[in-house]
Length: 171
View 1 (cartoon, rainbow, N blue to C red):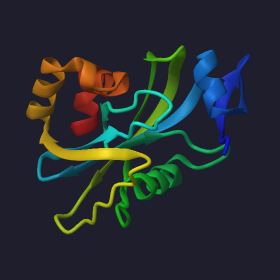
View 2: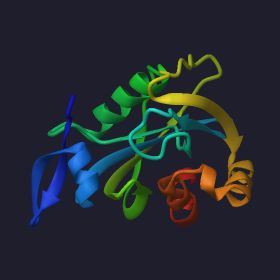
View 3: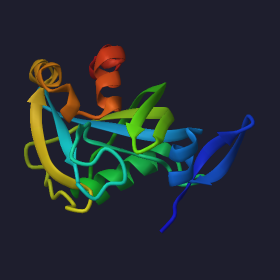
């Protein structure tokens, strides 16, 4: 299935195929979610079948809204599709823009609505193996230490969020 996502072409927001947006480096909308529990953040290792950055660690989930999809609805949809997480109330934290080379001739030029959600200890976590190969809970200090030790194991956008936006994301 080729999903149409909102991207800007010549200053106008239009529906564009997701792969085309990345191959052309078009500025486009995205959503990122951070799920927190008692001072720890849930991160995921992307499945090997992902078309870019397979096997790299990222924030809880990240995606692109479908054309005309509300960002909050998108965040909730992808939490369920990627990790089997339902019943959380993601809160909008901020909007950021970044441009990053994600390999394979692809560029992410994203305008990202960032959401944060508080989990409960009883929250079910059922990763979809087509999306996620592994999950981990780390406090921010441990996550930063892992990124510093093995930066090649983490997605460009997670490094950008930690380096440039952590205070606004994690408060």
